[in-house]
Length: 444
Image (cartoon, rainbow, N blue to C red):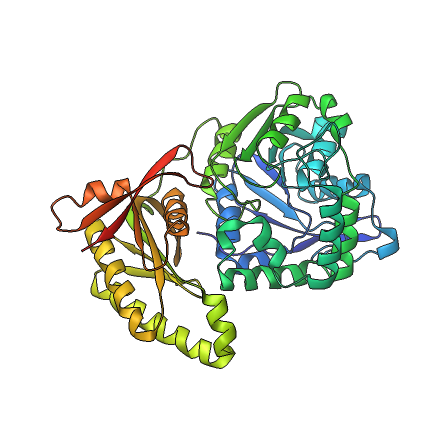
């Protein structure tokens, strides 16, 4: 759609702030990202690139690395900037790109900095967007939605010891928790964004911030949008909206804290409507498909018993077998998850038969898998897929027992007359998905 933007520098006093500009929409949009960022490394991650391009599709997107983070000048650990100094980075970058007035969007914990900027410089802010927002990270007697103080202390210690491994991203983004490649990508992103000591120091500072007192002074149109089951979601976002005069609060489906993870569109659709007044028209890359998720039962125990080399060889055999079965049934392998496969099919009966065949075939490798299937809308993003249909299929698989192929009612109802048998497994609440879902075990 676009080439990657060039990185430039704006100067705030003696500090150089790295920034990029993408898109040529009629409205400037300044993105205050989550605290750890790297304006160039994020383009190596398909989900992050899609997130940025969606924002730039209806705006001139202005984004930057805060001082001390990413490609901006480093700062001494003993002299981390105050929130107001970090807030100056917004004004500095806006001046550098001749943006007199812009929509300011705060993502995740960046929402605190964006809110302070909007309250302080209302003449530079045409509107404010706060996504997966919180006014305070750590819980208090009058703010029960934050994390507990003992958990906060443990998290700081964990960051200092294991920063750059991606584990913290997996912890707050359930849809990538089992995706080894995604966790490795996020680990690299963390290493480029900040060192372990800087990360721990910044998180310690974030845990002390509380911007609730300034929210009632915001006088610009404001949208607060939260994923329903994400960290700092629901009630935390509502509490932010309740304190801002006239703010609009919207809850959307989702479990991931990171806006570049999971279903990006469900959040950005709300942002686009707020900024432009109209929702986007869906492109042809959104299609109906049956999504298959599988994983190997007790893979961690098996890997520990076999050792790295033998386990890797077994996984290679599993992956090759899965690839052949998916292709034989007319499907498409989207990616391997480390101990499973994600595949899509244009026919639900073929997808179910593939799952059953794969379940039977892997027994020859002394493996046992579980599988989940759902038919719904998906969005194609380069070589991967996303959307609510993918999310539901993953949640269905999570409820499957070993050696079980579990499907949603949608799949069952679409394959009438196929000769497949289905046994009722009851109604279940799928994490992050509204309402209860009827699930069925598939057999030949």
